[in-house]
Amino acid sequence: MNKLAIYPGTFDPITFGHLDVIVRTNHIFPEVIVAVAETSRKNLLFSLEERIDMVKEATKDLKGVRVEAFNSLVVNFARKKKAGVLIRGLRMISDFEYEFQMALTNRRLAEDIETVFLMPSEKHSFISSTLLKEVSTLGADVSTLVPDFVEKKLKAKLAL
Image (spheres, helix red, strand yellow):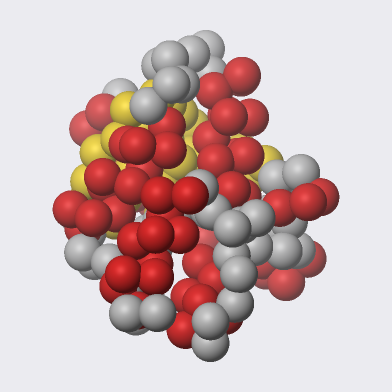
């Protein structure tokens, strides 16, 4: 069995939901790369360097977890790293259709790489970075959704 899993995403910013999935992945696989996408169709708030720094800070105590940037098809990145598994988080049923399409596309592109879906705990299942940024813009308390240092960076970035 391949012992390296890749958990790709934009992590703009990293949330407790992301961290929950990273910890769950780390319980299954001794080596985990949290792969931070350089570019995205999403409207990113934080730069690549800021997102990498936040993920590194959030995962610094997790043995076997490392953080890297990527700017290619995730299956090409996985092959380059010799990983056999992609991890995808499923929060709500609404995530399933998109993630299912993505998994089937990745399987067509790279039959040797499996996609494994993990769900965060119920208390984190509703958190999305997009929603988090939206409510932060409106001054909501997000302290239960992200680590303290991420909350501070959000406030600074949004000048709240």
